[in-house]
Amino acid sequence: MDACDCAADDAVGDADTAATLSARIARYTADVLRDTACFVSLDGELTALPQRTAKIGPDAAQLLTDAADPVVSQDVVRLYARLLVLRRRIHDAWRGFATVTAYVECLCMVLLCVLRGWRAIAVLKGARAELVCTEESLRAACLRKRNQLVEEVMAVYSRLCPPCPPGHGQGAEEEPCEDVDPA
Image 1 (cartoon, rainbow, N blue to C red):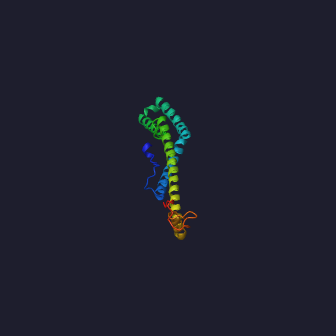
Image 2: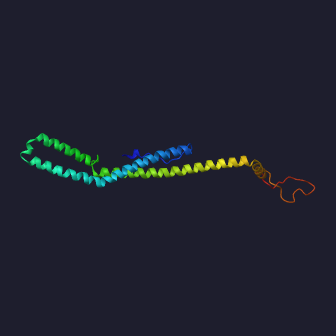
Image 3: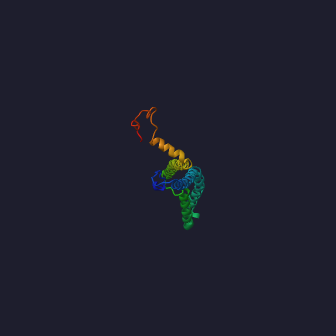
């Protein structure tokens, strides 16, 4: 597994909606669960490898004994076939890892993918929750304005045309309020 297998992008763009974020969250969750299963499987190699190699050791020792035996060593084709089978079992015992370092690097890479995936999922869930909250509050404000139309018109009127201060307009000349900013 290399770095390009970890494609959990936590960037949220202006074009993202709750639906697009939900789809990405679902895809990343499936990827993280797959990677987690891979990590658990690789971690299980720590106990499985000694069990697999324990079965190979006696067979290798027997092959050496048979190769040293003057009678059995006459059947070179059979010994060579046994050697090829033994080499294949040794290769399979390592599950394709050439070295312990390759195994540890793979284990670390899978763990890194799992952590990056969960981080991206958390960020995207937060962004989705924010979008949903904003959408719901806009819908609620719109509904409130529709249901309370008179109150909304009066609120706008009060903001744009505030009442004059007390005592204004009681004199002979009626002047508009100059000290009130309608904005």
